Length: 100
Figure (spheres, rainbow, N blue to C red):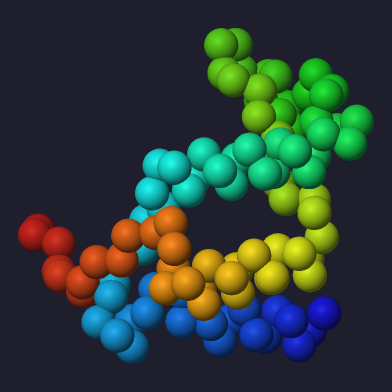
């Protein structure tokens, strides 16, 4: 586990070494990820309970199970695939300074 976490720590997520300072998910990629998380969580009782964990404590808030419970190896595999495909599903932008 320690080696896997170190590998994630050393991953150039924002590609600052390539001049990118910001990374944002595209709407379609975000929707795909939420659908995948929902699918994986479907076998869990936690995703169906009425608790704060899914937002039931906030009136009107959509109930969404957010944590990824597909396992750490599967998560790392998905991260590796996204990185190998040029951060597919993400928009990378430059290191521009924000105006004050």
